[in-house]
Length: 283
Image 1 (spheres, helix red, strand yellow):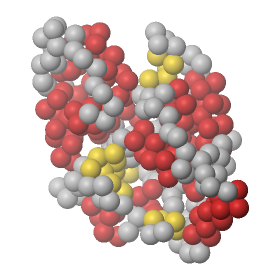
Image 2 (cartoon, one colour; image 1 turned 30 degrees about the horizontal axis):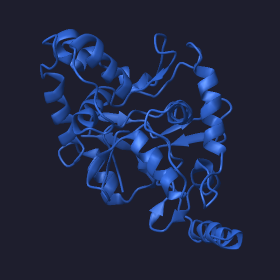
Image 3 (tube, helix red, strand yellow; image 1 turned 180 degrees about the vertical axis):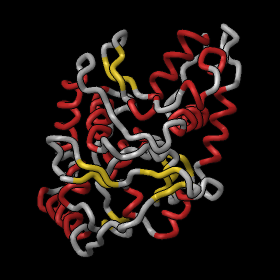
Image 4 (spheres, one colour; image 1 turned 90 degrees about the vertical axis):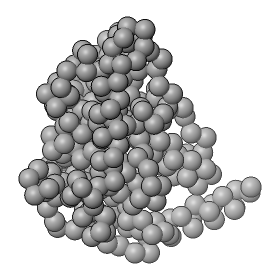
């Protein structure tokens, strides 16, 4: 494709996201009338926005209502499936997750709000999926999950759900987390692909505008894994990263690669102060 055609494509995208503007709603998310979710928070120091906003505020009335009711929320089916995986005995050690950790509502309470975390043995940040695989190999004698295996998504959703309502906070002072944050920030602002787009192009430069029929949020990740209505499935964070990169017509990195782990550290920090919403519901 010629440079002229590539430039035209990029211009088309730029125009597509600048035609219509819509402000996020001024509404409160209270799940089942009991669990208050923080959907607006003061941004951490050094953030490009003064206030961080949940993607829930950018969705339609119908989509927001689905998340506010656990009976209606389709993502809760994955929470239930994840509980089954939590209690399932697998591997040569004859153990389940529950064998070591007991009742997840107690042992995993608020844990997911603080991932990714520095893993000293691996010398890198671990997200919940990587920690699950490490436990399976080292403690259960079981095979690690392949990326986006149904049981992996269900178990990650179940564990993260135990932090529902807890504010997101990552420890950048642990190990080399700050260096990974810097790497993730660089990745966030790097334009890639034939369309020459960065994460920031949509979620910062065109925040609040529309791209096709989708209202562009700040791109905060406090709701992942997230149930996406357009896919009728639970979507993991690295699946979404790769999907966005694919949409720029660039070659996307492998899931849990250093590039995407750094991006997870940075994007998680960008949403600090917002409550964990897993399983969030998005369009």
